[in-house]
Image 1 (cartoon, rainbow, N blue to C red):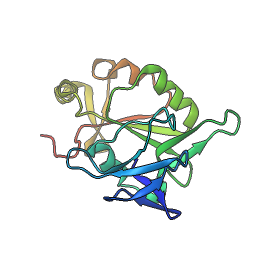
Image 2: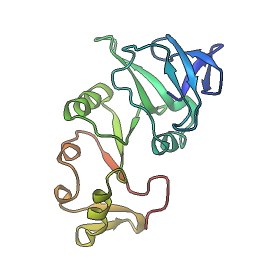
Image 3: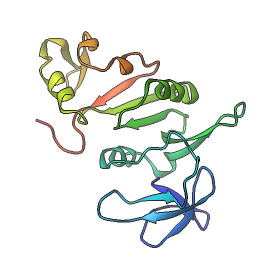
Image 4: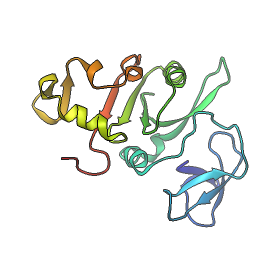
Length: 182
């Protein structure tokens, strides 16, 4: 988690801080080492949000493109009492989920059904062969409205995982990652 409650304020992890989880209100501690991106972690194993995943630099960079009050917003379903932490949720309740790691088909469907009005942003640099396949698909891609960084893909089944092709919401692949890709 990027944010926790400290003295009733949303605060990013810093050394020696203690706070409360935004989702379950349980104690969390700041993890501020040199191996992973600074984050908050529950003190003990907890079933806070079963969709939780550790964040990469790519994930955090994407989230930080949006106002902090849109990041890590708690979404709650009154009927089922289910709640999850959306990566980003705009003022118009559009959810943006940034996905670097593999996600099971069933979980993707569950998130889409829960959030409904959402967009996936997928890290296309995670697997080298994905970008290579995309880069070598010149006959199957076309610049979108003249923008050299946005493409329309014809025959996407040749280039993208079938699990993303079956998504019920828009899916955007980011092939630049946190660095410029040639």
